[in-house]
Image (cartoon, rainbow, N blue to C red; front, top):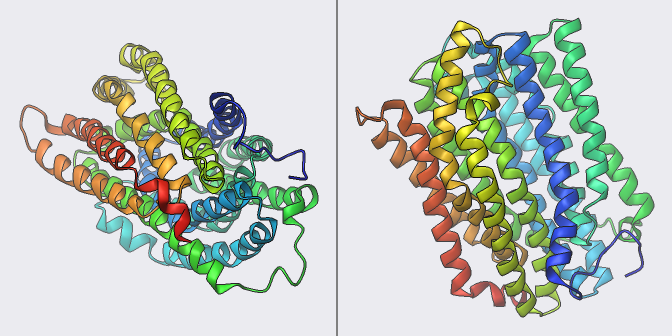
Length: 453
């Protein structure tokens, strides 16, 4: 296939391929989560706990707006991996060329919407007056980084499609170092507060996008596009939207469900909101092995379905399920019994903070038994996406929306539960969504999706 940076996963041991592919993704995703972790630690320790809640109030919104643009990268990656597996270089290069138009247009539209509607959206979510101004400032600045996020994710998806999961890792490490350094400079030296944290993040995202584009063009032969390649192919653009839009919509639905839950959280005051933010950051970290495995499995499934090797896809699903089970069993006691210590990383142990730490520790005891269910959302969904069954993503997203809205509004009104219903909602949502994802995979429709294009 003409390049040392690519890997053909249609031959060889599936477990070895998946694990070898997952490890760089995991390290990269952990570094990416370092953005959010450092933002929260710097804000929580060196600005104020309420400033931490201001940043947390934007978490679901950021996910929503990033998903609308970069979610399309999944569709692009699916098409590219299937053409790579089928050894169709001409169509692969056409996919890469047309991804430019898909990513640029979606990112620009989403940036404009997010920047100008930040205030009305955050007020609609009942963001407390104590920190709504900080939330608006933080969200507007982070929206300016959407173009960088979209293009980095697009290039990373294309690199993964041809079997290169290592290179995006290097760019994430670089951007993480930049992000951490600028966080400290902007907040501690210049006193920019939440705006400084947001500026550090978008600068780091822009750097990761630029260096990934330069690398791909210079080192991967498929990215060496001429003027002829760059002519828009509206059929290819339509395919990219057809496969990517359901995933973007799914992620958007998940974000909307999280936003609705955030509105419920905000109603219980700043302490609960801060504990929710801390637990959210911790659980984002827990999800990284699942997410990394899922990305590896998407590329693996895409290549093999493109090569018409469905039996290898099935074996990949089974091995990945065992990996998720092992990791979940390791994580359960760590977060069930060590929650207070882990939460303490984010804020200083002062009198007000002690309440937040106790809330966070108990919350982790509620959600940690559901970690296996969380992992079993990622595994079947990855197989379905890789094989081109991305239409299911909207069903998946709708399941999360219904569960989060329904459970949160019922459980938090039960006197014996109160705000603990927030975290019970999270666990039950993971459980129901996992059941729906496994059910779709077992239905077997994914085996024929690659033939529809």
